[in-house]
Each structure stands twice: as C-alpha cells, then as structure tokens.
Amino acid sequence: MTAKASSGAFRALRFAGLVALSGLGVAIFLVSGSYLFWQSETNSEVVSQRNLQELRNRLETLKRERADLQGSEETYKSLVERGAFAPEHRLDLIEALAELKRRHKLLGLEYEVAPQRPLKFATGVNYSSVGIMASRVHMKIQAYHDGDLVVFWMNFRASSVAFPHRQMFHQACGRR
Image 1 (cartoon, rainbow, N blue to C red):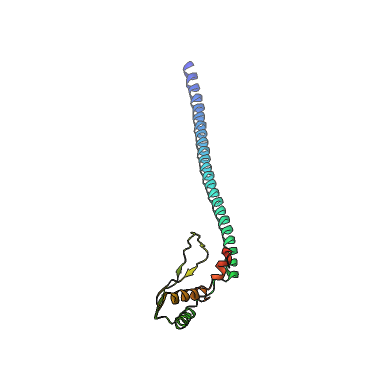
Image 2: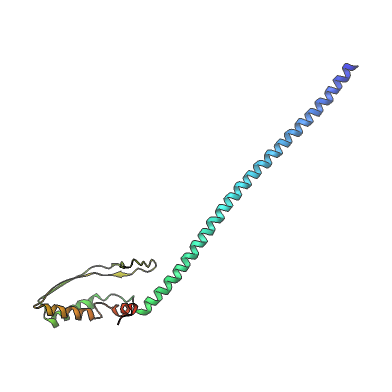
C-alpha cells in the first residue's frame, strides 16, 4: 500500500507542481509586461518633456522676436515721421548738378550714380526688418579756381537734392 500511496501522492504533487509552475509563468508574464509598459511610459514621458521644453524655447524665441518687432516698429514709425523713407530723386540730382555747373562756370563735371545697395552704418547698427538703401555718387570736377570748387561743394552740400535727409540727421545728432 505504501507503493500506491506514494504513486497517488506523486500525482497530487505533480498537479500541484504544474499549478505552481503555471502560476509562476503567469507571474513572470505579468511582471515583464508591467516592466515593459513602465519603460514605454518612461520613454514617453522623456519625449514629452523634451517636446515641452522645445515648445517653451520656441515660445521664448517668439516673445523675443515680437518684442524686437515692436521695437523695430517704433523705430520705423519715428524714421517715417522724420521723412527718412522718401523716394530717390535721381533726375532732380542731375538737374541740380547741371544748374550748379552753369552757375559756378565749371570747366567739367562728370558724375556716375551707382545702383542702390544696402546702407552699412558706421556704428554697426542693423535694422533687419527695414531695408535701408543708398546710392553712391562718383564725381570728377574741373574748375578754374579752387575757390569755385569750394563754393560749388558748399552749395551742393546745402542743397536738399544732394542730401535730402540732412535735416533729419542733424536733428538726430542735436545739430542744426
């Protein structure tokens, strides 16, 4: 009888062992599934935090750009009020030069007005939202006397055709 009892006990133990092993397998499956889910959530959170930081950086950049544009708008309005954006009058310049040549009886007056190009300020100030353009004028002048040349330059400099924005710049510098 002891042999039969041990065989029945073995079957009962075998069934209990299978239940225990299947329980252990389910437990391992649940733990590994939970771990993988936790890892994916952690990665998701890291990605979300990175995206949130990028969006905050973009927002700060946009706020700085908006403030810069508001400052540029104020500068632009003040320049417009001062008349800095008047159109170029090349024909008026040519007529004024012909009149000054006739009035001062110059021997020769040759000039070349270059195409417009962006103006570079000596102070290094850059207005990125406004394209300030200027034209360079090259002149060759022949006069009878140096005094005629000096008077020509004084009259040319004083004319509003040569330097249409001279008054504005003198006001900005505090000069008259």
